[in-house]
Image (cartoon, helix red, strand yellow):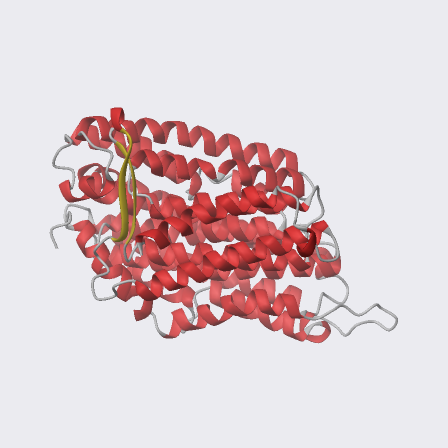
Length: 517
């Protein structure tokens, strides 16, 4: 199993290098462009298959134990090690990354975004996948930082070269925000490693902050937390996200929302909660306050965009909704309780499935109508997807109600558990303050329902198609193949949450207890 995990992490990098080479004559197909796009599908498909095998071979009776581990010395002078492993916290995110990467490669094979050579596109997509997978698999602070940074350059070029209007400004904003956050985060990681005498995340978690003074923990949480908060993104460090999503190609938005945002919240759970518990306890009320501010801000921004006459962009609206949804993840983490952290991890996966599906659907609507402007889509007769493309309209409505947290779908459990965690926060945290945060977060769920139902009404409903108007295509075969897994998993996670919670809960219990369970 350890070799399988190494192959999962390194495989996409090898695939990226191979994508830049000339295709063998027998594999070119109709054109070299088709060959390299097919190469991307094959590589991401193999990685997904390997991730599924890893999940099936995982010891589900002991999800709190690191499994499939590799631990070899890399830089002896700094005691930096190539240390890999997965537990119940990282395994779902690893599989989610492999799944979304494969679906994006499959979608791109049939609907390649306009831009330069497909070779560069496929290579960047695979480097992005490798960096994200490594982030969830590495167990060394320095390796975590390197993997965390690996994804920045590929995403920058995906936005800048294959994006839409305003792509250059959006790409620069993305890279500047995240790089500045990363510099501060690196200082915090070095502080922890130097003061504790190790960069090993497992050893640091087992020590549970006992080797670090309270002042060191507070500084470390402030520095590392700022870098992670930018990537999450936490209000008010979110302003790069709407521009990046609006300008990015469809698959770029899917990966940005589906997996890249999870890297920030994963860092909070994997590093800050177990390594610096006293520092986290100091900042937890502030983190919760920023989280609920993001929930309300994101919802109000979406309500403003969906209002008739506002010329709101549908992709931008879904981006702002991510700010609100990730607010629930941060609120769950801030409670420092097993209930809240399990809710945060569940909401992470649910957001990846549902928001990934939403961006796929919004991209399809934009391809058909030539715009994502809500006022244009809801013009004289409306986009009227129910009447003109009923399957596409039904899928958009399904994704919307899943995003607003309808019971029985994936979006419900994470947000509910995060609110339950705020009802009874960890010892040492102010319960009245967290009860206030819980009430504000609950109000945010109502605002979320309001703007998403308005989106469904404006985009899916409307008058009949005027005579002589060119009909639009309903869901195509390749779209059905790319979206069906997300729909099925959204339903499965909503109806059977124990599949995911059974993995995360023992690992969370052990992490919060400092490895003593």
